[in-house]
Image (cartoon, rainbow over all chains, first blue to last red; front, top):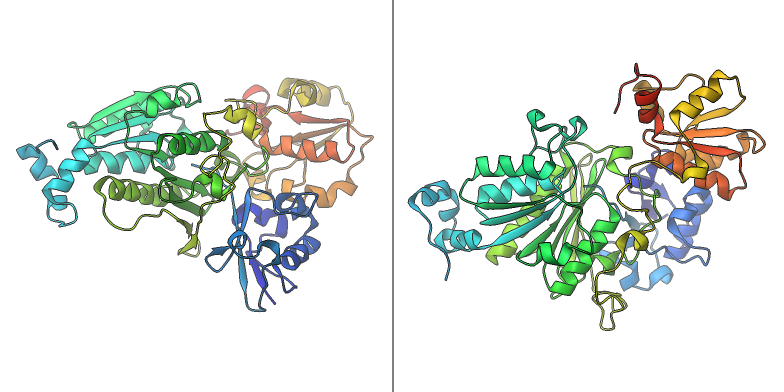
Length: 90
Length: 384
């Protein structure tokens, strides 16, 4: 099962977990799986059309999924997806 | 022609002169170079101190805030004796004590589209040490439009990011984040907290990248984003690529001059921490006190995190942390008067928006949060 790593900015929405196992063989299915488990995350991640919001980036290994096949990027069961949010603190 | 070093400077910088990658010529380069630091807070403190100590000859500091007691846990350029003083004056005094031979220019003003070009013009590198999205996008666009490197750092609780956005050689900040999140979606350090050492770590990385750029040595963070986690003590890198659709550094830019960044980010302006949801949705601490005294039935909802209740609380308030509010909305009655509050009014403003979008109308935001309540109603509560 692929894993989604969640930054601390979003952890209060998922009971403080740092990683969430997700189902699916594509990034889109993985994101849907995460949002099904935690519907409160939906407005943070996708717009109404189901596209990733412009302030959210997902990395598979070192690569942004935007530089791969976007939401269609295939996932292996042991893949780890890293969610990188915009933060402004300084 | 690079400036010469005095005998005193040769002694002061001797540990640099011993490194072949710096040496006498490198130190002279630093003396001739300049850096503008936007923000003299958590990130700006270590950046300013290390660049001054390293002998960067001309440092600019931009900030319009004053030193507050709650800054001192992480903003190490300021001291207790400087509380209440302008941050740029406090920092300038400290930097010139550390290194009297450098020039430090203090800009005690907000960094805006109106003054950014003029302020930044003389500086070789721009270092983004701000705490808000409008200034981050302004800094990015300024750097793209002027061809200067943007040495970026940002922090949240135990996690930090750093990169060098230099559009001549790689992606810019907008390539990674084309648009900011809606106001309030990402809590600020003032609301969410930050480990005091974290901006020290990230700021020190920014200072390192600035020095490397000015010396022309090493491999920079251009095209890479560093992700640091203090709890795991992990450093990871991800690759950043230029976005061909980037509105400022792409081949067909839409942004060719600085814009209104408060409007772009959907924030009302410099009162970003005021904690107001707009007059019609606000209730002041005194108004709330009067309503409670009159026995008016209302539900007082505290949307802070549970661990914050140990710092201060208002009698009778129920705790629904913002992150869990959506899941508990069915426990609230839209026919009943509801007053939401948090520390300063920012998170409760977000909670208010959430409830309004769900159809609630009899809902108010305690303007300025429990800190305003402590100032205006219950002086026994501590400010934090």
